Amino acid sequence: MEWKGRRQSDNVEDRRGQSSGGGFGRNPFGRSGIQIPMGGRRGGGLSFGTIIFLVIVYFVLKAMGIDMLQVLGEGNVGGAGSGYEQSIGQRPAGQSSDDTTAFVRTVLAETETTWNAIFSASGEQYREPTLVLFGGSTSSPCGQASSATGPFYCPADSKVYLDTEFFNQLEQKFDAAGDFAQAYVIAHEVGHHVQNLTGVLPEFNRQRRSMGEREANQMSVRVELQADCYAGIWAKSADKEGILSDGDLEEALNAAQQIGDDTLQKRSQGYVVPDAFNHGTSAQRMKWFKRGYDSGDVGACDTFSGAI
Image (cartoon, rainbow, N blue to C red):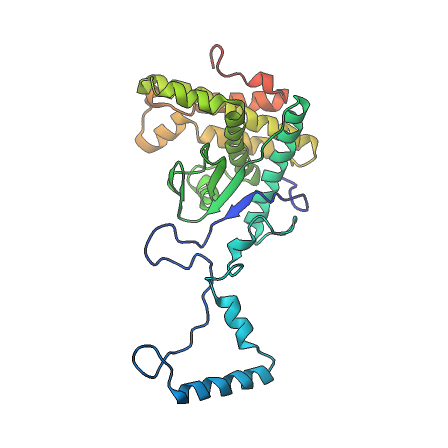
């Protein structure tokens, strides 16, 4: 996948390094202030000798070109602009903290280009989603997110949640290696955002309240397959932009195969339970991704009419 050097999205919220729960977790700013030993009297006061010592240290460091007041100010996590997440959404386009972040930002930007064009052609405006990068776990309006839950889209805040460790799992646990396999996962979750904007997800959630588990699973499969089809539409757009390399399409299809319900159930328990399918079989997921890619047409992604 020829992604380097392309536009990167600013709609990424990087929560890696933050504490996800209560109590005294890791510093959410990813840094700590410089601490000076507070000796002297009980009650936290400084002795006169300590004050004189600190003043001497200050001027010695000042003479060496080190301004301790500035250093302490940068380390003050309680002030405005003191932590890296203060700059989220303000990072200049094209900059990223690492290759994974740059890759995610680039893929998200390409989905923005695709769906902005599709919505605009229909006289509609595409509202771009935010993608949350996290490590370990984080909170969302849809519940606690963790590496165990895998990537997901939360319609309550229009955000995609992704623990980048899932990319390693995709390769090592699911035998789905390759950067375009990873891109397919992102594009699939963005497909759910498109469904949210077009009313598919709200309607599904409304109907699900009156459905039994089996019926809800069957409807969920149709929702997921449409998101796969939308991912295929994005892949077609990316191909037209000259982003795809030899073997990329096969990587995405292999990923779709490896995360089909039947394949996952066979791997985990040795047998399949069709009534428990909620994402679609491997064959179905490959079929609908390919349909989106071959057609490049949203109209070809109607998974709610007829057989799937």
